[in-house]
Length: 173
Length: 173
DNA sequence: CTTTATTATTTTAAGTTTAAACTATATGCC
DNA sequence: GGCATATAGTTTAAACTTAAAATAATAAAG
Image (tube, rainbow over all chains, first blue to last red; front, side):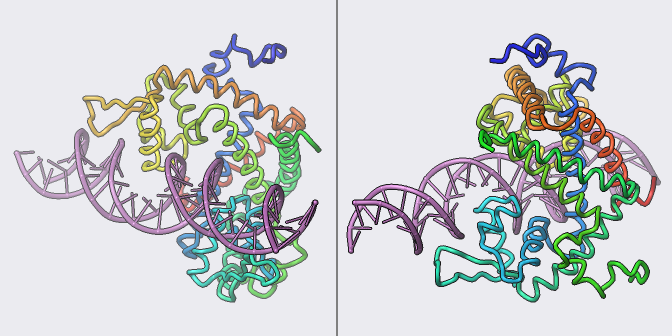
């Protein structure tokens, strides 16, 4: 294995991992902070969605995708856009359908396909949730400079691009 | 309800939500990008942990906390540090224990308490995972400036602070 | 001492999540 | 047509997740 970089090699493993409690590499520190911040926000958004609208976060995400596609989306496309696995989409759509918020249609020209679409009730509910959702985020980030918000958006975009180019299945491109 | 700000009121709801596909407020855009980036990274880390070490991400997180506390941690403290609910910690520790990576002890002086501690096997496995984990992150973020990584860490810290001060249960402090 | 409140953890029910196996189409090729 | 292959969804098993209810043990009050 790697013998250069003399940095993550086995020698100072203990120092790295169990050092003065702040010995993590910058990328790891950034990652841990992104993760904890994201967790903090999702927990709060989740709670508010539940108490104020009786909805879950993944339901909100899924409905958000359908809201802007009045003609509906195939489940596979929904899966891709929400970054949720295929099997998971099946269950989410089922539950939303049984709540009358989503309906499913199978086009005749390709009977493998299922297209999910918001019902009027689903669209109405989502519209209300979306307004609240934006207000919540503005509230939660109220103490952050507008300029910093914009810069973060841009810089995190660079992180995202780097990550995408280094995923396991990215020997190409 | 609010009548000022003439911005999220019911009038131009459609415009806001279904506008030119980029009409979200900056905070919402930042949030969606943080969320998708985090999801991208966790999915990748999860896959590598599974294929290379047969571990899950929450197991890794939990073991990370125990690794730096050789004397172990109470389950409640573990719950707080990992941002995982109490009930969830119970199950995670149970599974890790049955894999021989963690052991549980109940001190005599307070028999309500359970302290979890890594076994030697658990510590050995975590040490290996931690080294790989740092390398993965450095790899995934390889195209991001070192300076930007540091700035992001700092600025996301400001976001985190703002969020913490605006959580539902934060009328105080 | 004994009731009451607090603290620590577990249990429960419903939902989400993943990876992998499976079913049902559809398409391509001979 | 008839078979291989690819595509779209569903199902399955195991784990994770949450919120809320239940247990258990300690501490506090009277």
